[in-house]
Image (spheres, rainbow, N blue to C red):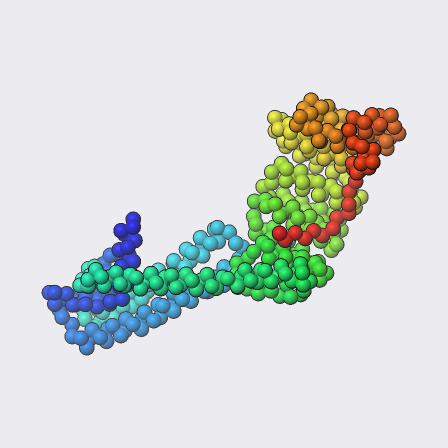
Length: 404
């Protein structure tokens, strides 16, 4: 494998385009890279005539180098505006290879016609000029030096992306220059591939400028191009999407949009329960509680029968939500079996059990069962002055910014 690679590099790195072999045959180099790289004439072509053909070849090479230079730039400028994925990367690499290969084939045909028109038909052989191994290695060293230089140039071209990203973060966290942050974000997206973090920061900057529609659009975009995979940042994105849609429209339409994007993701049970929690609190805040219990029933039904731990934690959330919905009797009925389950394994659920007793105690207070509430408060082991901190409650949703 390495031997074949070095052979190709020797062919590419060799700058010679013409030689006369020991038998007096003239050989021109063509555009093939792997085999049959030379065009043989069984005669010695005068230097003047060979020189004119080489000049023609030089002109072709100049045009081909422009194709080499402009093609990746052109494709890159298109690439930064499309959805980023491994498939899009592979597709653009395929396009680059196809364009370069097609160009070489086209120039090979042009050069071949020129040779036939000027000197007649030729034989295909390998282009093997008589040069020393030292000279060949020198050519390879120059070629690798150019490759390293090109790599350094590419790295230098991408270095400003980190500076722009840092400047945007500084503008929105310290300098509070939100308009400047949006402008820098546009510059970033013009020059570099799409970045989830840039979208998150720009959405926040737009929110602070009261451009709620623009902020919502950025969250929709980033949730779309991240695909089906669920990232930890998606919780905040979806929560903010819910908030922004409610500002621009109605709570019901906000929930519909939230459902549309959250169901596209391949979320774990924990992530599904977190999403359901966010949506349920939002519904309670806006007095649209219909459907909350059905959502919890659907999630519990979807769990494996052997997945008792997740059934327990989701049931805990459901009982808490019932309290917030002021369904206190139903909340007590929900707390009873999960407390019994936790009691059976105090070593594992000891801390959770303490909280559950306190929450059920508050539910009993709401229905007038003072004695039962006192018993639960006592069973929780929580001191009286800390007990108030355990009453189920919620805060109204706010826009969340997290740029760690």
